[in-house]
Image (cartoon, rainbow, N blue to C red; front, side):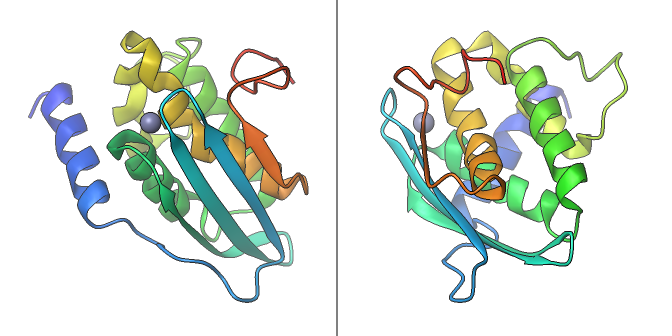
Length: 158
Ligand code: ZN
């Protein structure tokens, strides 16, 4: 299967059956993510177990790319340490913005690299990255992030 077909299959699968859908009643961290450009709006909640992400859930209204990226993110960071999750956030952002070539540079993205294709679709980059920025916000106790405005997490370097 070529990468384009794999990308479409993964997006369709996670869009139809999003993993970890819902809200955690006993969340220790949460954040809301907005992407006004597309209309994506997600809520992310997680519960830390020591320094690990013990449980994580998301819900909201979003396009297929955002929903699939959120779903895959939750399955990939669940059980990981906060440091490992932050590393994945950085790598995913670098991949989606074209700074990281997952084929030739070391990374921990694994199957998440199917999203590398969004770098050629500028209007979709923010859709794919939104859940990752929302996770970063939640881990850093920020309640809301938006991909628009003066705190644009895509354009602004940390
Ligand atoms: Zn979107």
